[in-house]
Image (cartoon, rainbow, N blue to C red; front, top):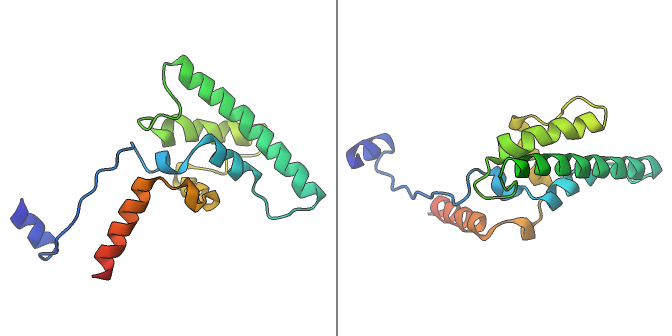
Length: 140
């Protein structure tokens, strides 16, 4: 195997990391972050503020519904082992947008957009450690 890896990667040493959480979405999603996502808006006028409240209410209701459904199945919706993309986010956004009377604008390939509302304080130490390792590897 070592020979194969040296052949494929031209002798470049690779550092491997196995994430502790099931998938990347488990690192960028929490109840608070999803509510923050729902509240974000480009306009802060009267209409924008009213829509912000409507979106937050819709997200809260959708979260309660999905959390309840997962718990009724004996699952912890916020466990690091939850397949966040399929078990929580996909049905959540389907219900969220339905409550807003809109077609679902958040497919699985768009979940990275949630990261736009993250702050540095939201990042797990493991993510920072891995990003630091990537930076060191690229820098050398």
